[in-house]
Image (cartoon, rainbow, N blue to C red; front, side):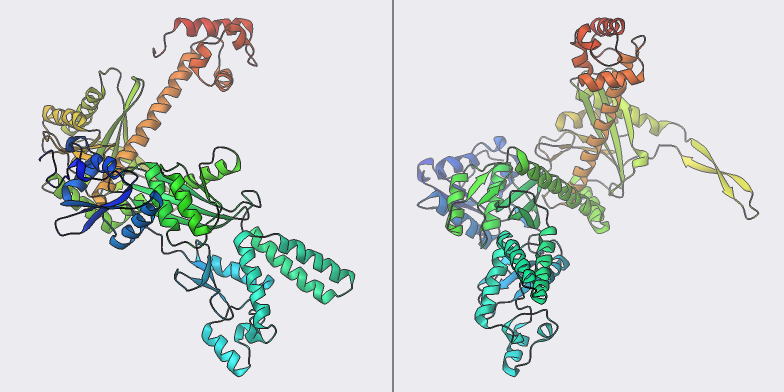
Length: 637
């Protein structure tokens, strides 16, 4: 592979102005669209020596056959142009969004003579005002049913409204009191428009002035003994309280904001978009994003905001994000043009906003896990994943059994390893194993040791473990039967190690020394998600949409989780063992000490007088603890 791309423009040809650039392939298809404050500086990053590029960026620039750019007057113009081109060309190497068009909205058709409120997924109704999104259709209908009790605006279809106005007979919702439009003959078009304005104002900010006004009118009517009017005001007040009660107050009542929580890994990201109006969460949108080239969290936030507000009508006063984009000031100008007033983009640091950001991030993390496990749990996806792996790794058959190994340690101490097993693309947790490694030089030596120990089981004579099971017979007596449980000796078709080329070579050496070269081996490097094979100078790059890559990721993540769990458990046992060696120190006092000091390391630095301050610890015992920990070196057993 040449280290210089043939289509690389001369440095002097690229302007230093702000602009938008496009990479195209040989057929003219747009592969990637990006923006830059300085085109020359940004594009020079793509034309650096190929060996220094992120693997996925390298794949993009080597797939491309040309690059072109458009200079714009300001950075804000580049934002707008980038958004338009991404929307127009749908470039395969830009981030791709999923689950963004399935959410229902509440819309008020302000462009109509007598506006109505509807549930819709159509974002292009002329003159409509949208609220939401809502997670489920029933949630929108429930909100509308409550709202029309307080603000009886039109809910009937256009055909029903037209027919009612022509015949003078109210529509069916109007006949049963669920539509207060002009067709019900109870209000004029002007009066109905005023109710619609109140409806929109309430939904836009949850303005509590309606609550105060209705309560005032209810008390006045009651004082005047107009109990029928008072009852109507009471019912409207109940409806408004019900709507407000559906969403908890998470921020001050004057807060109108959008908050974006993001969870990501190397290939995908999940976004939770909380729509907050009047301090209450009025809508939640979940998006899943697939990433192709290397992109930072700040750049991802930039893309998410462009997507969220490119065609938006409702832009809030504040936008809370987990990381500020480099062009945050330009984004604020761009959003101000849409809102007509100032918009602030900020990262919550403390208080309610920070708490809400943590909640959104947790939701995003769960959504990302669901997105990944959904793909690997589907039968068709699993079959496709195993077939793709077979082709990508050059295997004679699909790897129906895959074992993944990971090494975990704490500063070189408490070295452990984990083995997780997937069969037919699903985890076999009863087959998981953990290993303690007493002595090792580095991770490659640890990997070699563990694999030799694991592979040794394949060469032992077949053994069975007999489990006695008591079964109830027809006569009510119990009969003993023997259940044959096979020994753990089933050979895998593929060994996966967490790591790059060094770990893979160590695994291959273990297979050769054990005489099991029939088993395939590969490694997955976390930073770039590359698949390494033994003896190869370059990794295998699986497409970002590949089911096989998601399967390998899940294997690697599960092995890492299992290794960390075992390592922490062993460390906890070591801590207990160290303190249990002190005469007179039992389990309850060990628990109190650890709770007070937080760790053995902190306890080791404490003076006897400080240890004596702990409840239940006397002067003699405190001195014994201090002497024992001072003479015992950290990490010894």
